[in-house]
Image: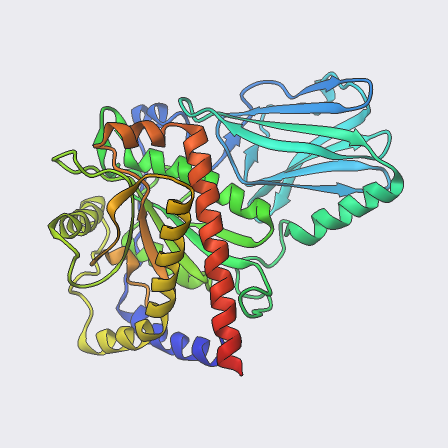
Length: 422
């Protein structure tokens, strides 16, 4: 977003925010908390940290109650392998009582600031990450982080340490607080806000015991983790636990993050059970069809039931004009985003709705300053879609397709920006 455009958008929002009421309330009962397998903002260890030494390598395994964003780095003098999490609760973890093995000299855990926690593995020789991966159980939502550390020369260790430092922003860095340099897209990490639909007192669609809120929270976390691991994206989420967040609070997250794009994630249910396949929605007052209109109305009604304030029909004449002006700039970018995502999903041979790109008046898409799309990843009312959404391999294919689509969109926006600067 150019400086002149940011100034105009800031002016729009200075007026609009006077008319917006941010409301975010939530809370879950003990029964609900148990039902979602502890999907709170904090992960915890679900078992001991284990070390398995071979003749060369060292494998470290951390069982977690749920997946969380994570990133690795290497530090020298002495050599240390570091893993930062957003966030693991280390309560009850006593590194001094752990049985260490192989090249591990000491283990430390603690807080790293800015909502991150840290695991430090002190080594007796230079070792780097040969493999690192987080696997999530599709049924329970639990996760296991597995790290394989391989011996390295001092030169190779320094090279990997520098590469990790260059691609992974560290806790406390300016990431989504608006203070980082705003180079054009393609020359800096792209800022994306992921919006797992519903949450808390609003479970969204429910079918055969599966809820939209829980399903999309798991998927959003997996997508966020994969995006961060590329080093090309900075990610914020409108919610990272099973809590209610109002529609305009979700929009305000995107605005406050100075996001480049906003992606709302849903998995609805339709009474006839015929709809299936991923569907992209962009904002329009006139819905593509009756089903789209019904989905938009239900999303907004659920927000009212949760205690939020629906934006539909509440804008005064001045705010409406200002929003139209701002959307005149974001609509072309939004349309290019929808096309890129549809092409990527179809290119990955993943099932899409027979009308893959539709339009409706979803209030959550009404951010005037940020290109915004809503993705129905699938429909819980479809047996096939429900099975796909519970399949970790399928979700990973969808995650990779979305990253490919986002990469294509960023490249196109960078090209558009270069043409405008000529």
